[in-house]
Length: 288
Image 1: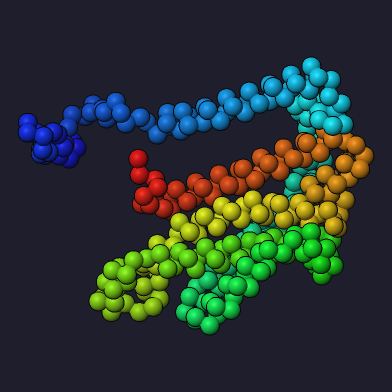
Image 2: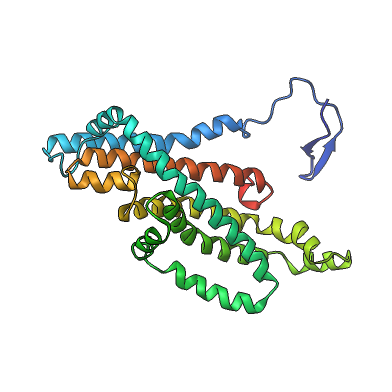
């Protein structure tokens, strides 16, 4: 038994039909099931990706491109399969720095954004500093962090913290200012204090900005950790593998490592995007 059904009236208006729905009621043809819609959304990029791989394979073989310049996808796949233990060890070494730095950098950026939201002095002082630090080249930060924190994953986590802190800070500050004046005035009429207004109104309104920073940080974290491994790491890690194999002209292994890094970054981004959809389902961007 469903609720009232809205139907079009004879004069173009709308009225409500209070007749009960039958148990076998079906949605209109225009409303596709969610699973079918998601599959349909995945088909174009999947088809395009397969076409690119096919053209890559055919072009390399027809033009006799040396493998040291550009190996075909089949050679990369073969090297990937034979090097799974090595790639797995590299993955786990790198991902420790990625996850630790991502969590610490994003969480600290969120907390500091809330703190400086109450202080104009801190906001005027930290935001310009944030812009300055975010412009620093990673190749300059990474060797310093390696000297400070050693060759293990801690130095890579430190680089990731530096790269992820200020995107979260800037986005959260902007998000906290996004709530409307009418909503804030309404909270005042309810005699809500700062923290009640923050938790009930301003932080929920800032969630799209926070998740935007989290998605940006997924790519920054992977890039930061891999580049940092170029400047010092144990004999394991995706950055170390790329640097070493380039010196040995093992370009197929370099590409296999790139595939692992790209797949990891894409899965990380998709996970955060899925969490965003669940947490901000009310946002206008998800209404279809």
